[in-house]
Length: 106
Image 1 (cartoon, one colour):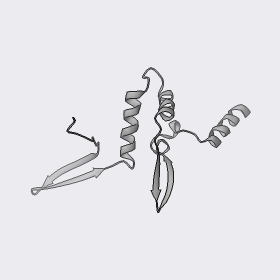
Image 2 (cartoon, rainbow, N blue to C red; image 1 turned 90 degrees about the vertical axis):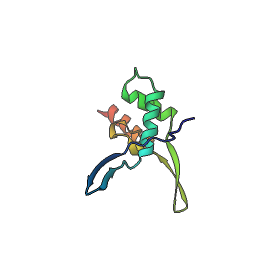
Image 3 (tube, rainbow, N blue to C red; image 1 turned 60 degrees about the vertical axis):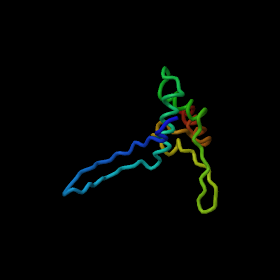
Image 4 (cartoon, rainbow, N blue to C red; image 1 turned 180 degrees about the vertical axis):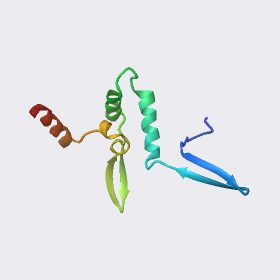
């Protein structure tokens, strides 16, 4: 059994003045989702493939779609669209269709 149940990587700057400690802390907006996605990426994808291929596999096999309730209304949220850089984000069906059409028409 592990004593440490959760690991958090938060950037903190600490300094002491006149026997008082001051801490400045910086946190990512979706830090738990970054951690979960990174673990799945590192442990469950084929390292011989490209980043893009590994992320596509990750999105397909390890979805991070959660239902979030706000003001009593449930909403489905895909956290990959919130944490991935623009070039790795999954495309919606409409965006994918438009991208394919643009490539054909070029």
